[in-house]
Image (cartoon, rainbow, N blue to C red; front, side, top):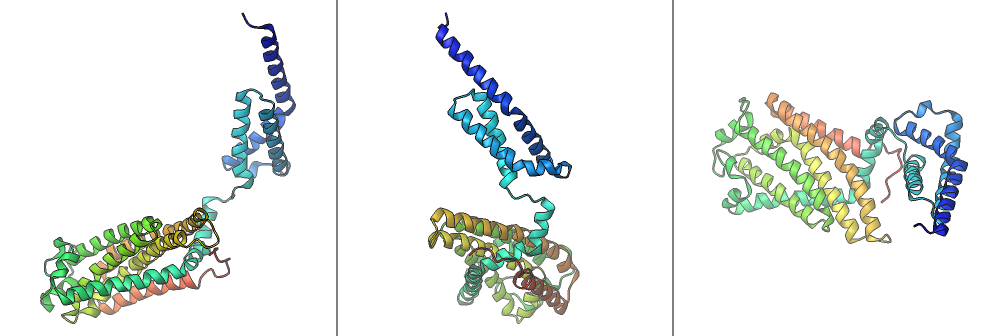
Length: 343
């Protein structure tokens, strides 16, 4: 049998909750209708009165939620108010931009701005990549057996130490659709895409894995460069590589720099906490990486079509040099009217 006093307490609480709901429910319903329209992308259907009332309705909701918690009203009502408050918060204080607006901002200066914000890390990654290329070149120059340790075995056919000039030249200017060097180019693209992602993802470990990845990846290129240099085909090999390589290697450079930026920010947070420094650097580096993916797609298209169609070294340099000039202008000259990202 239920205790009469307890029963009266339950009835009183229920009555209090019902009265509380009736007094404020109209505002909650109106706020929920506004929020629902905004979530569905129907902001233009909102009246001026609704737009102006949104902040007031939101503050009223927070007041109701506070009273409901203090008065220990029914849990269902509190859950409803908390859910509505959370939805409202993101729409009242969140960034109200559509995907199209974000995309315009990204290409209109946001991406280049983020790249300029990590220029120190770009220089670090640049010198690391140069060092990696020299390491690969010098190792093979000192002992040709290093070539087989650096270059995957399935590419060790005619492109090996001691190969004749005619054989090497044939791989650079072959018109066959699936020539051996083309397979090697596809391997480089796949490998470089993986290196780009890993160089960024592993940056949190104080950037050490990112640096080692850049060195190892460029050592492979240095080893291959030595093979062609021995037959005075350096210009031809670099021209062949430049068609897609200026974009592809630039993407690796930015990915490595993004990873180094995160690692450096964690190791040397300055006046910020380690968590805050890592968060800020991660946001900036993630924006750079979004662009790196686009660059890798462009490099893949250049590798798949332009490299197959252009067999003249001068034209190869023209295409590769043009792409390099485009990226340099975009990253370091375009969008300077935008505010620089926080360092």
